[in-house]
Length: 118
Image (cartoon, rainbow, N blue to C red):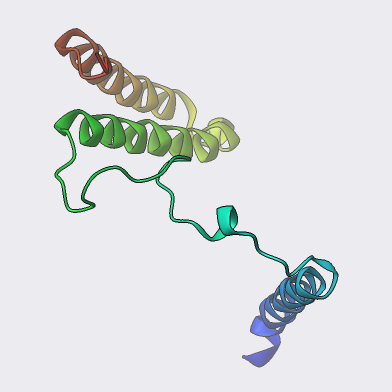
């Protein structure tokens, strides 16, 4: 059983080793001097001007949800495209239905004005 997982363990060890090596090189070679501007708090590139506990606009959440939906759509398209020969016409129709539902949702959100930031 260990033989089956050995390549995964080697890969994980090499990845962790490279990550630690790069972190160590960054600390060793990088300049440690941090000026006042680098240590200042910021929010999206500028100084915070309000209380951090204020509520976000609902449009922010709508755009975030739309991003997640379309990001997942792309994540589903890659395995489908790789296995298109195997799934055949049924897979093509299923993906067409999936994309059609997402496009209808996108058009609905667009018409409702969820993508406009006035």
